[in-house]
Image 1 (cartoon, rainbow, N blue to C red):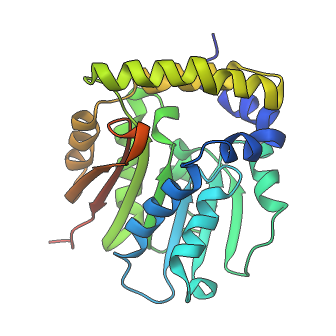
Image 2 (cartoon, rainbow, N blue to C red; image 1 turned 45 degrees about the horizontal axis):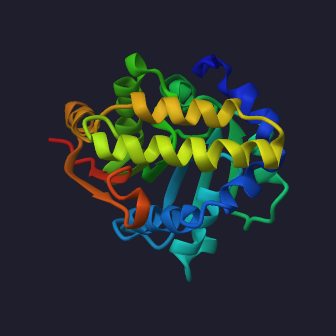
Length: 247
């Protein structure tokens, strides 16, 4: 059984077919755009500094740029991901001058800010499909590091699957994974380990209430949660939270 520690290597192996796989999910890019919109509508500057934490192959970064239009070319966006294979897919695409990418683990954010060029606070952080891939004992610490990185009134948006405490959602998720997602993973990449891990990780991830409690515990305020429409209703959620002004 694949572990979280093996994830970067597994993503490396699947990276060349990952964009094809997610394109077969009819709501994937639309949901990313919705999460990006939720972040951008709270940004206070026409030239914001934003971190795309767990950027993967750059789909979430592209969603951010589209949400930022017509001022997207003025934004500074840093995409960070643990998988060099996924980053190579992102770097192969065309980007405006303000977008850059680097390899790193979310768990290194607190210790690597200077090395990553994050010496100044940022206006927003987007983390799409990231926190399931951070071990339970480190999730609150990563959220605290994100909180510290944000400027006063900065915004965090997290998009993540969660089915804990929702038996019907868990049943639908399991059926879709084993009848659709895992077989498609085999067809598109010849591998299923990443998609079997996806199924397990969603089922074991925090409940919506537990993750919301983590956000409050590190100091976030005005925490909002919305789920998506369609078959992923009650399965895929967008969390938005604000860092209050100091004092």
